[in-house]
Length: 113
Image (tube, rainbow, N blue to C red; front, side, top):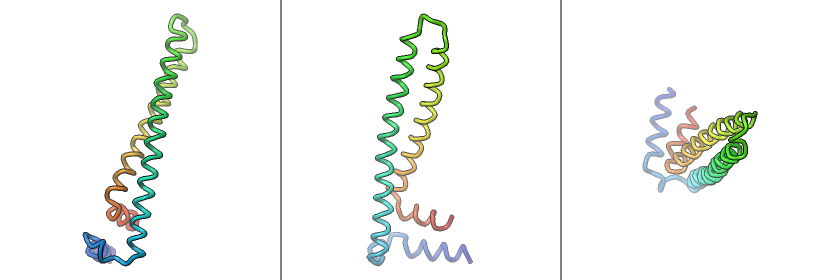
């Protein structure tokens, strides 16, 4: 039953956006716009996190390169935390770009899950 409903939904939406009612077109456009806005936001945050991580790591390294104190640990933790955050933001950016490029497939996937 669920498989038949998926096939009917795919037949209806697959390549027939021009035949959809105005409400469905608006829904698809809003879904696509939200994905675009989220991808821009994730891109800006990704660049800020990456720049901040690089700057802080260099700052800690240069300031305390001759001293063997806890700032070596702070530099390493800054790089680890910032790198992890940058990878997460890059993943979110890529996923939002995919949702913006293929809104109908993304909507169908979201509805069926």
